[in-house]
Length: 141
Image (spheres, rainbow, N blue to C red):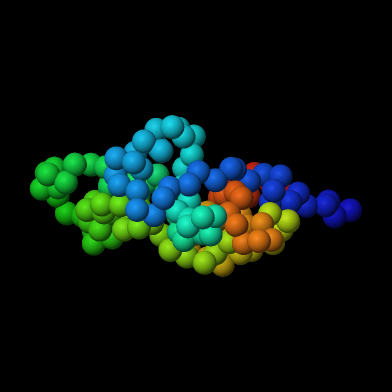
C-alpha cells in the first residue's frame, strides 16, 4: 500500500528573515540569535528575493584586511568575501514549493534545481518556511 505522503508544512522550518540591505553587523546579529538556522531568507515584505546559506556568510564575516593571508580564493568566494550587505551575498533563484505540496513533489523540484534548499510559500506567495535536501531526505519513503 502506498503511504500517504506528509505535506511540506509538516516538516518545514520557520523562516528567519534578513532585510535586503542588512549590513554585515546586522546579519551577524540575526545569525547569532538563530544558532540552529542554516539558511536565511531575504525577502521584501514576505516576497522571496533570495537566500543566504551560513557557509556563504562565513566568508563575508572574515575581516577584509585578512584577505591577503588566505591565499587563492575562487572568484565566487572572493565575491562573498567582499560582500557588504545581504543583497550582494544572497543567492537569487526561483525554486520554491508550496506548503501544501507533498514531500515527493517538493523533492522533485529541488532535485531539478542547483540549490540545496528552497523557500516554502503559501497560496498568497508569501514565505512561510524553508525546506532543505536534508529535511526531505529524512522523510522520503
